[in-house]
Length: 529
Image 1: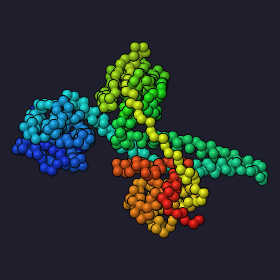
Image 2 (image 1 turned 30 degrees about the horizontal axis):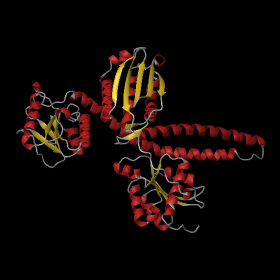
Image 3 (image 1 turned 45 degrees about the vertical axis):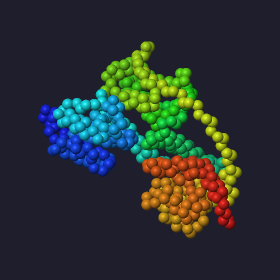
Image 4 (image 1 turned 90 degrees about the vertical axis):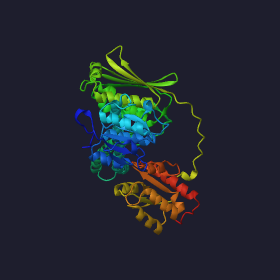
């Protein structure tokens, strides 16, 4: 169990045990620590986590240099030791007490040894330190909820990756079987009519089962696509976002929670885009929907209603979520700490997005409503007209030689089944084998998984670019989701061709044609057939 703040009789700790978290070497505030105080210095989150997981501390002195790193540090502290006081060392011209980071107990300027001593003395005596931010305990709860959001993002990335590989296999093989059965059913009937009809009935039953399986797998595919948004650790704050699309996604994810409590009524008008982070907007809408739904009792869906209305109001877009029914107002009055914390988190996200969040009680049927209002995004310049696609993107008239590199043999075989009717396909399980194949044989296109043990897809691409530059133009990266920022940044470069798992047969054929067109554009002559 992670340690928290130590306690002593009378609320006073004679000798503080302090975690000093500062990426800089040494400790410039050493003179602020009194004799007898035990100070443990850590430069990063990994070492902080190790100490906090096994040792008790009375306070953390956190150097605040970069806002993003400080936010991550505060989230970690809130998750491991929610009650641990945090004193932030800020740049001399940085935050004041009124502007200190969320979750911080007190702020002291770097180099202000007297100020740090005073803050530590206040903690030691049990009195509130100077410059304590009001509502710090509430912000701790918000930080914990924010940490849960981060955990959700990590979960989404992991689930998406693990589900996408077998899902790609299911979809590819089911579609292959479906095409084969369709061909048999569409063929001529000769021989004994009774036997033929029996076989046709059996195949028709198989086709129905396959169609059901395809529909179910496609639903999983949509869920994974929805979760992909939450796996983005950061997303641009100034993207143009269709709030109606975000609401469709959010409603899909919380619908099961709603349907056990209320009827869902959607009134989603087409509205202009708003500026913001898609992930943050999704977190906000899901948080609002979940909070409003929590005001209703489970098991009385016919008596309750959740109404979601999206509309334009002048130069703003308004989203109103209303819960109405017998239990809505009473549940609101008795809402627990978690429900209040979730609404507080929604307020913080809305504030960060420059939105207004209001709430009130229905004048008509008993219930409550919450409304978020965002400004319509400023008009953007029209994008330059896209250049006409090259005629070379059409399917190649000759069979291509394709190398598939994936450590998941099932994925590789599924891709082979899609390509092999028209092309020559060879698959290998890793980067080293792929390099041996490329040295020994000619390949027109390489399909390469991004995340593989021993040699990643990016490493393989760089080696191909060094040895065979024209072939590097025809490398297609396959991904079921990446975890590292470097890989995500690499794949976002439009110069790279990407095939996302699970893939459709037409997507495979399209990216194959584009890769081959790029290979031909590189000027390397095609081998003799």
